[in-house]
Length: 333
Image 1: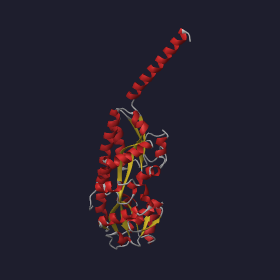
Image 2: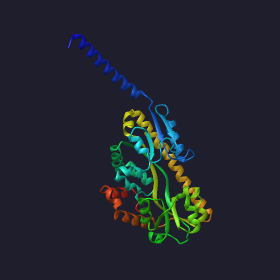
Image 3: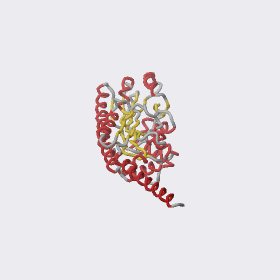
Image 4: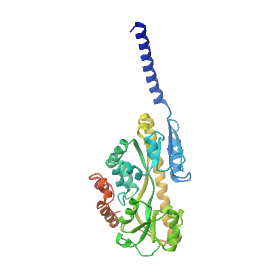
């Protein structure tokens, strides 16, 4: 190799190194564009929270919110993030459980008691374990996003205090083995039925009841054709605000802290708004003539967890995790 060739090679190498260094600095200083996909409507409480996050981080991060599944189809958020076609998504734990079976523990009846329990789980060692599993498939979990607790809504007037009182009660549940087992785990006789058909089925007596968060009962006017709401609180409904691990790791520590803090603060407000709405609806339903009361939740919890532990659903749960989750809750809730 001639001296001229060696010099040309050295110049090229220096130019490449300079480009890499300058490029890295530029990347660190960039205002990253993050697209967030959610399925909620623009009028949803959570949509307000997502926009609050975007506003709070605007100086350092360009967070673009797409509600109503207008960016990617519902159910495809994880794949889109993993393929680099989406930066952030509001992801159901059920979807994560499809790739990480251990996550299914969070989708079982009475594993989570309430919002405080949900937060304690994600803030502690259990959350750290589950989040580490998510990192392995390219997902970084920012925070859980609460949207309501499922309660039992019945047409018959028979009082329900324990799972035995639901024996023989035909309870509409969403389709799918996991949802149907959930109905069995609280003592009922579950049956699948399209959401749009529930009102008529209650009205005609084709089913005895259904389960949903209270805002759903209000929106669908199920209170018009039922007599009582049993505050079983059998499933705490939540999604997780998720960002691609590679995207997260490409951000500066300052940007990460800003996004984390803004998300936690906005979701805390959103959670309280949901709780306030649920409390308001309890009184609304009472005013509409429905009986609204709390059963023996500990009896329901004991019954449900025994059902799950006897089933194939618990086979993927990490050893000791259920006990660890239970220890974070209130013994008699």
